[in-house]
Length: 413
Image (cartoon, rainbow, N blue to C red; front, top):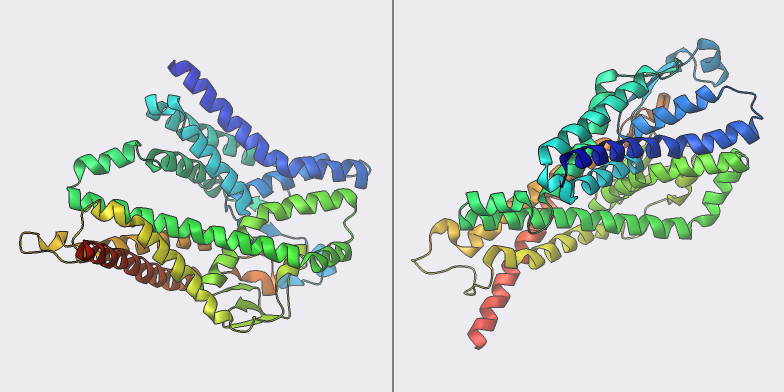
């Protein structure tokens, strides 16, 4: 494939990605400006909010400094003049990640990887710089380094996933060629089980959020009505909440794992106990229960069961078609014993799954405003400890159970 065509396609891809991300915010805000405000306000203000929303979607902190008069009129006082908003709207980050994967999976990228990576990341950094440089001055400021680095990290993450995902990618071939067979089997099994458990658990959390939205339809609509945003305001508010929805999925993920999450001072949501006396005025808050359901602590069996299933499904990567139970004779080295390999693969799975949960939890937590909203989201290290232990136990039991099953089959024959 012609490298010039690959370069042009990469540049256009990133430009479309940034335009689409900013446009998701700017389009509904333009409707509000035109039909709700009657062209009475400055459109540049809507553009600034759209750019800020796009950066916040990648976890770039927004530093807000309100005039004293405005702060006092909102009841925030002097202490509420300056605050940060840094809870990522992960819907935008997910779009960038998947777009990066799409670029990395192209045939032209496989033939010209360095050219594609350089242009894709460089284009993202350049466009991020232009967005910050030409951002209208106002009450919100953005750190330039964060603005340049964080969107590029998500795009690079998608490119890296395309390099490793799939059976015939360059990353898989590297592991097979450079690692000993037993080590390659342990690493591949651990990564497959860890990533599989993380994705499956996030999928379960997404299903739970979907069910809660259906069941709690009436409270959500009531919160919409209480805000009185108008027809086009509803469109803008809904798109903002759609961008926030993957962040809510991460919050539910932390609830299913065990530690739960907070929504500011006085609002704790956990299987161990729930207190929702003080919630932010967002329609999505309508899906939250007033108290933890009876027997909610039993929900931690879900992540354990998922990890167990991933261990069973990953055993063929560890041992292939070989049979013979969990421990073999003297002719097999200690490190190559199936039981030892299963434990080591479970350790890698726990580390991989915990690292993914740590990144998600860090992005889904932070500040949403002054006062009681200075701490929102899950505690990352609590999630890592709970989730890492669950993955390790579940995966090792799945791998060992597979070994026992194979041994029983062999003995019957």
